[in-house]
Image (cartoon, rainbow, N blue to C red; front, side, top):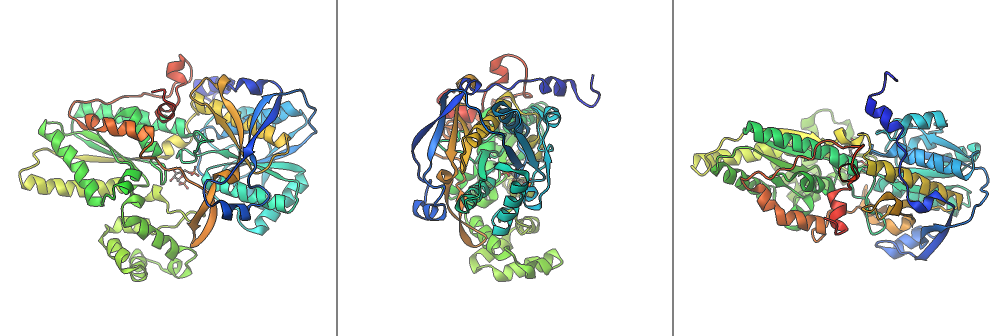
Length: 551
Ligand code: FBP
């Protein structure tokens, strides 16, 4: 027995991912109608003349073709998501199936590996070591933004040197924006380098009619839901704590919504609803307090609150404040030169507009400091570092103390804060994510072999058995629109936020009152199961099931 691996790791390394039936044999491409970008069609078309308007591709049964020998490069980009290793394994196996002489190179530590010419050849020994495992450690990841011509040229140089025909970028919306820009650049220059994207992110916000879900969302949500369930069991056993649980997901609340559907907590905040209803921070506090007081009236002084990590951005006024801060702090050397938090605070106060400056001044110092921390290379505020759950606990406790003094609240409020994010990003991929990612890798290999560029590999019909899944190629330009980044309007892949008129939110909305009630309706999902009956091991997320009318 290998001593550095757990029995589960060993069992998982032998797991053969399931793939759609159509991909088991020879395939031919089937082309749909020309496509349009999701918005701003005129601008996107003029920025991407070579890759705009391509048709969606699906696969049908084909005849055996002798494909010439090729080399391909792969990049893992952005935050980790369970299944990244299997995309690479699927790509590797797909390429070897097309021609056993094909080679796969991994660029190290994200897009910077392409620019700095840091790479490794991925052999079957390396790939076998990482099959069905979590993490991105096979080649590492990074958040370098590819946007400068010299970076594209550096990439072209290494591709020419290694005879690389195509680059696969496995990433979220920002990374696939990189992929789209790179594909267009190489096409305009007539460089023989294709670029293919793969939809990754635990956040679940890279989705649309062609991308049902990004990979990693399923596993991460299952890990967080297990932990939430465990906390709920503890809460209802000990009967003395309110647990405020912030969940990753950046701007979108998909993770929080999915975890709520899986575990049925007492209170769930959805950022998109907060924005839609124009709720202030005080409104949110009053909403939480009302439920706490109500439960206390029944003698129940415990509960769970789920908070999406991006909440703060959606509170009216805050969005404007964050936008102003983004603009103010973008490439601001004066700000960087300041040493203390107080100096930074004073500087910001003086530079903001009157209205936002007032709001900034009213925030607790800790939150104000967190809001001004470094942006990521794409200009996003790093919401994972903003401790909204602690802010809410502080404000709720204060309000409850007032109500206690007025004799309205008779309970005891003791709160514990949690943040679940990194715990789920590298978990061993669920069966769904293991199968889905392996299939994505295989689809990428086929798109490459057929000479396609500017496409994202996609798999649809995910609530059916893998054999019935539908493999596709989706033009990246189809997903683009114009948005403001670092003070300028840029073409980017549109982020999918939670739709308030969507079926998952509506299901949640129609149940949340009963979940808030004193009668405990918690669900304890338990850990991900990898081996066993389908209804235990292979279920997709509740979000997908509800969206497909199967829940
Ligand atoms: P991606 O969008 O790159 O997949 O990253 C998702 C995420 O996990 C967010 O949920 C979170 O806000 C962010 O990454 C954290 O970033 P970092 O890994 O740089 O701390």
